[in-house]
Amino acid sequence: MMAITKASLTGMFRSPQAVFFSLFFPIVLIVIFGALSQRGGISVDVAFDKNIDTSNLLYKNLRQYGGLHVENGTEDELEDKLKKGRITALIDIKNIPDSNPDHPYTIHLKTTSASQKDLPILKSILQSALNNNSRQLITTEEVPGRTYTYIDFLLPGLIGFSLIGAAIFGVAFVFYSFRETLVLKRMYSTPIKRAYIVIGESIARIIFQMLTAVVLILFGTFFYHFTLANGWVTFVELLVLSFLGLVVFMGFGYIISGIAKNQNVIPVYANLFMFPQYFLSGTFFPNSALPEGLQKVVKYLPLTALNDSLRQISFEGGHIWNVWPEILILLVWGIIVYFIAVKVFKWE
Image (cartoon, rainbow, N blue to C red):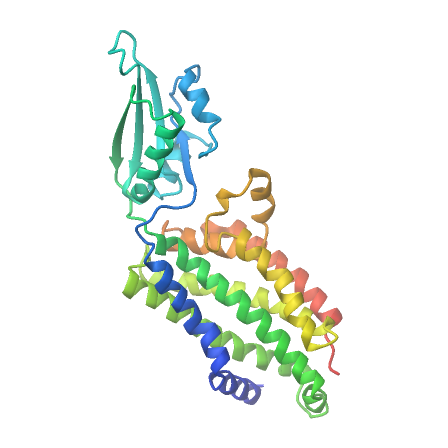
């Protein structure tokens, strides 16, 4: 098993394609998107203060305005989301009686340093919702919070992007090629246990891709100031989650290698599984921009669970035990895919 692991790992490091697409291609994306660190996000998440006057006509108009995604929750939950940058601001609107007729309303935005990048966008949206009417006075209050940049959102998504692509394509192509060229059949005839053949190849791929995750995290941290909320503890926890996600994704690769009739259909099967997740799982933009009904579905996708858990731990300062719902989703997917993989895996 260790001999297979060593040989496979050596082969991957000698493959320019494997090194480029697993390591340098994600780094190129970091460099490109890193330039967008100071730009705002695609959508603006907000919440209304619990003491707001809900009978206010302006409140009703903003509540229905399409440019705002309104989060709900208790007062403590909303405060926590605000400090972690999950929402841009808490909005309070008051109708001031006997006030200056030019300012019948006061719109108060409670925000943090974690959401400053989206504050200008929110103000622009509010002005648009008000038809640029200056009769409303907008004030802001900033409470303590971490500085949130686009790299804090992007890098976890790129880790998931790298892991799912390399795991599925790598496993599917390698094991199909081994079966087609009778390598698996020859190994099967040797005294080595069958499980060791699969495990040895899997260990090599895990080592290679975990090195990729390490490089991406360190590159983003030292060159673009990616946030590791709890330092090295966060770094280790990110690797634990990456390992879990990688093992689950490799299961899909085993399934594809077993059901593929020829090499030409492997990219088709792989992309049918991966591409929807690239765009629905919050890889390059927040999935909060999706319709609310669709959000309830995509949160159960394995890549969504991995991306969300990585972000909660890296920037928000959570720990492994705080992301148990996402870990549970990954474990359920792992049980399902490996049950299917055992049924469809072929040696020749």
